Length: 164
Length: 230
Image 1 (cartoon, chains in turn yellow, red):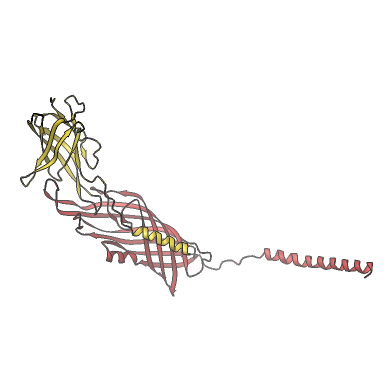
Image 2 (cartoon, helix red, strand yellow):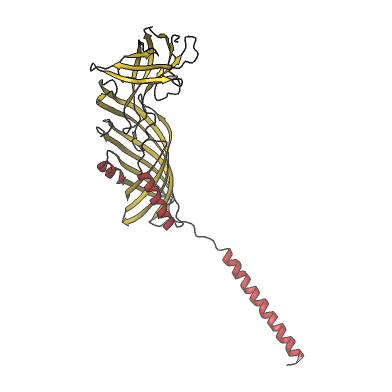
């Protein structure tokens, strides 16, 4: 009888525990992968990249600040919740201090996503179209349309012009 | 004592031993051949209705819970086919951290069987083990007013109203039932719930499932029942 009571108490204690099952990676990022015009991997090397976006309040928000180095092969940019189009501004500063400015427009659909009342509400997206200016950008290609918590695959291939 | 007297005494002992053997062996065989009396308890012993107290208390103290009742058939004090029905409700309003509101109210149904596992089945107190198959279909409102985009600072109304979901699950039940007075019994049971099939909503899985509790692959719940024999 004592064993049964102990067993029941253990079960009740386990049932009384609260667990939050929010995903660890709970931010929705669009992953940009740097490539050369021929599609081979590129790095920023000695150049420095800054990415920002204008906000509805008229101020800019910095999304990536001073990314540089030979290991800089990709970067993540947060996607807006409900805007039909995100305007991404890129500033690439070369070793001579010259800044090359470009913009990318990302058109997307937005779907609310729910995990639990304990997890922050968020939106998943589907990329429909991209367009860009061509100061330092060669081409922009959609690689994966669905944007969610998964950042293991690049969503956009960002092919930069040849730099010296 | 002469040799003849010794012989007579030996013969007498043998005769008595044989007589005892003849008398005792049939008696022993008679014990083995004892037949059990036929059980005079009828097969259909009656019905019982029960109401759970844990669900309403949970509903009073938290943002979700159930009102639940059951009808149980007593077959020979051993098998108890059971039908359970309840209404599950969740009203999680404006979460302090996530600002989410989650609302649902829906019925759920269970059908199954309990077995009285006590050695003497005809006592008024019982120990049960059993199973249930359960099902619910429900609609959920998940909303958040003026959700602010942390980066782009836009504000939008997030969520969905009337998101359709459904779920099937199995339950393993263990419990006791004790007679208090006349037809009134009190009993508790603990249940292990295992999700079988579920239908996700358009924007994700349901957080609370009526009758199942907080959603997941499995769950533990406990009930405390007032049972009345009818």
